[in-house]
View 1 (cartoon, helix red, strand yellow):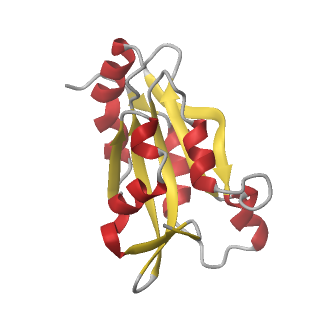
View 2 (tube, rainbow, N blue to C red; view 1 turned 90 degrees about the horizontal axis):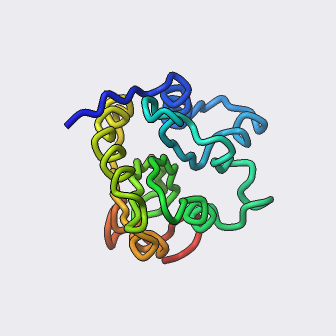
Amino acid sequence: MASGVTVTDDVITVFNEMKVRKLQANEDEKKKRKKAVLFCLSEDKKHIILEEGQEILTGDVGVTVQDPYLHFVTMLPPNDCRYALYDATYETKETKKEDLVFIFWAPDGAPLKSKMIYASSKDAIKKKFTGIKHEWQVNGLEDIKDRRTLADKLGGSSVITLEGSPL
């Protein structure tokens, strides 16, 4: 069921910036790269927009944000739905990797109407996010607070570190 909700150009721009990593990026550009970002519905419930101020920049990690994954989890509202992109850095037994994860946050405490409109609008944003390998629907903090759960989504038992921390 489509909701008729549209995705704003800002959302698409952020996705494309997170997806494409410039090899020639200078230190300043690297610091401004988004590590995580939240998206919400506009007041009129007609557009998926960037949630103002709800992002982690790569330059924040180690400065104002010690553990980007745990910080990201605290950004999720306890009683409302959101979409999120998280740029996961992890290591398997063979190699280091970075993958974007699309997260649909629909906590049990969110109003039913909110869950319904976010669920019916999910395809609109997913269609714009081409090339996403990992999608995760999360229904509460219990499902997301342990980094091992994300590691399982990324590669199961072959993942040995996430965000530089051993599992």
